[in-house]
View 1 (cartoon, rainbow, N blue to C red):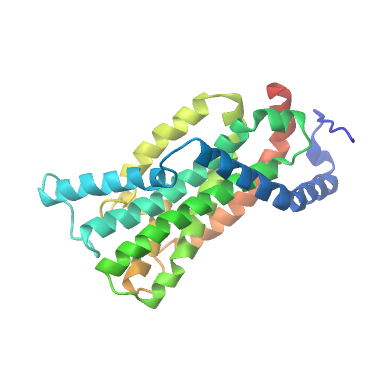
View 2 (cartoon, one colour; view 1 turned 120 degrees about the horizontal axis):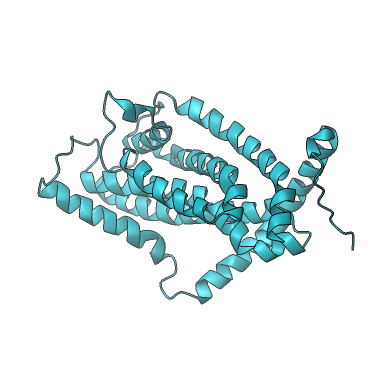
Length: 273
């Protein structure tokens, strides 16, 4: 078996060779990622009784609490375009997909620490397996949302665009998660910082309240993706200001984060090994 040698010499000294190796690993990752994804699913189901219910319990808990607070007028919330419970449910499902995507690269690589330091498995396969799990979780949550929508809101054709909005949120989250993964593998503090940042970011995002017409909250990069996707529940075919810009930034950012991880990988593996 051919050995893998990680060198400290700058890989960008030979950019053509660096790009060719990156594409070879990426092409080889699909089949491996699928096997890892299936294996992770089997392990997860063996170790839990409630299974996919855990994907919905935190979301439903937030919906119930927010609906109670709203009904008692403990906190003043501006009128929403959807019935408030459905407004919060849709916002939480979209937000959770984004958070799962941010956490996935670091969680998957940390769990596969022995694999990435002692085997020839492309790291891209591990990250891609995590992305598949994020998308599966999003599909399960969206299935519940569809059932609830059928009760509360009549079907409109624009709802068919909702998966595109979820994919945009996942791509944006993966770009951020992959960019911080090299540092997160070396320092546990990064994972704690991400968890803390997500708590603050949640309250700055129009998940449980409508987006204000003015103010700094409109510059939240997640807001256009979330607001647009939620508006598609109402039959609105347009996109919010900044939606296409953020989608473009997410796509470019994901590629840049991948290349950044490729550059950092030899140093990370050396430290972990």
